[in-house]
Length: 245
Length: 245
DNA sequence: TCTATATTGTCTCATTATGGAACAATAATA
DNA sequence: TATTATTGTTCCATAATGAGACAATATAGA
Image 1 (cartoon, rainbow over the protein chains, first blue to last red):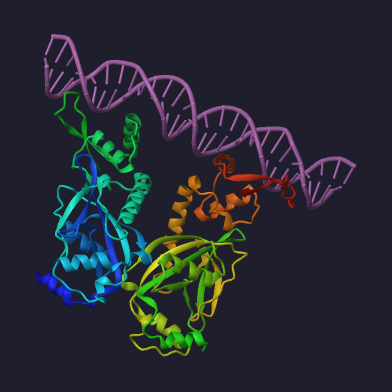
Image 2 (cartoon, each protein chain N blue to C red):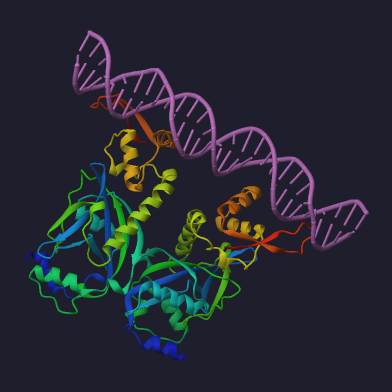
């Protein structure tokens, strides 16, 4: 048992954290033309969960979210959006977390703070798949990428949380087309082709887009800078590379 | 001091409620061609606040929201949307609530649960101005409508909450045009003219819309039913009345 | 009674956006 | 050197939108 785990078991009152309040993270990355998210896995339990965390007593909640995200991914300056807060009673199920803690050799009392009812604030993040260093938290064994279309059953209401995050991301995609420059930047290499950008949109939206229309719209938004150098590698005309302005 | 207030003072641990978690409500109504929201006023303190509430230990958070809304307005079956959760440390300011409690003749200890740090979940609601029966909570003296453009300074971060609620409502207006039938129903009389509907949109969006285009779009959405009878009262051609399908 | 007035419902036309396809250009491959 | 796949661009038909014109008409006032 690591020192951190000992600290967790002994800190049965959750001292230092706001009680009853958790955060859950849907951390999106883009790799091999697929959307992936980070999941925690608990060995010997066949349980999976979203990365999560708690808010310290002297900490802004949104700062706490950035802190936890840094702990799980090693990354700062991340696109992060708070999308919904989950407060159903059905969330209150001691069984899975008790299983996890027991698999770790811990033996929590019934009123251990981790086993109490939590309301959880959902955040979604867009991060650079290649730069992330996924790191499990003290209770988890691994923190690894899972393809979105192929998720395992998750603890509690975490599948619902993922669903709502994706819904929000899709809606934001439309609205942020106009305003934001570069929400997509962390999901793509620094220089990318129009086809790659289109594939990203198609993957997030879950539907095909028309090539000529996509190119026309993207160029008209005036958020892309066309680079001199060109990609090469395919048996066809070389596409331009772009980066966000 | 009412019985309820006594209960509040004695319940210095907030027994029965989830600790540290509050809800704040931006309750919109439409009257005299103006958007209005409900505010609580605390006599002898010149303090104003959004209606708020807490979640019971055995209650879904969204159910709690509907309960509180019913307590403040007398209404059920209300359009209600959870839009953001506010968790900054700057929210944690004992001064205003202490002032309020003292003005009520209460003398809370420093660690009274109402004086602790709260994270607050923001909801906005759209309700029928004419049917609402605004009712203050046990600590407030009045609960009354204020025109949105003319709000007083509010407690803590409540002005920010109002701002964000309006932002969300405006964004939802566009997206829900397509999907929803009748989010606007509670803000209008059962039968209304196209001009009234347009004025509602203009008031929420804070900008003028073109008359012919508005009519064209609304009719094309196929959400309105044109009634036989016509409005009369103005020195001009009588407009049709509509209701939501 | 008759005219003036304000507002309505609809139509028109120019402009802009979108869907869907065609076309020449071209880097690697065979 | 010809082939192939994919690119950047153009084209045109269709749809959506902006801005205004116009007749219709319920009341007010002459």
